[in-house]
Length: 164
Image (cartoon, rainbow, N blue to C red; front, side):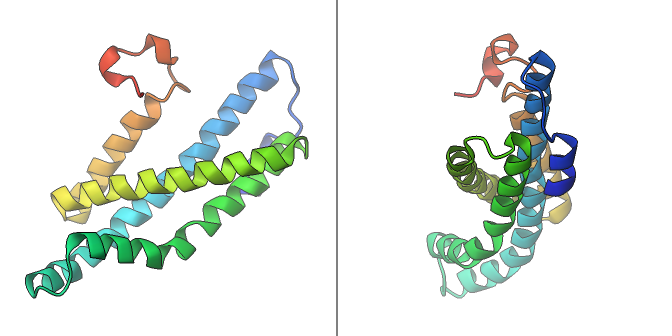
């Protein structure tokens, strides 16, 4: 997908149209975290049953389950978004200041992963069933995504939607 998106946004101009196209490219790149959010919700709804049994037996607590699960999944969750970001950004900026952009993209992937996992945990912890949890995660992600300033300018949002 990074190569397809990168090909579409390859060598954009530096005029106003090029800047607007880059905004669209950033929108597309960030939207990829939605797919990882839905995957995490699914995996948590499967794992929550095992956690409930182990917790009722007194084997594991909530913090140790979440920390252990995160440590086990980090090598599974981070490489794909980072590879996507690096490939996509390389094609988007065509090698200009790539090192700085790579650091920013990898940092953004890390923070996005933390937010995604936290949102998935919140949705699964409150609803536990896949149908309800993924609908809840979808709703919260959509509200968060629409209010971040790419679709509607941040100064035009009602105060209760503004993100700090």
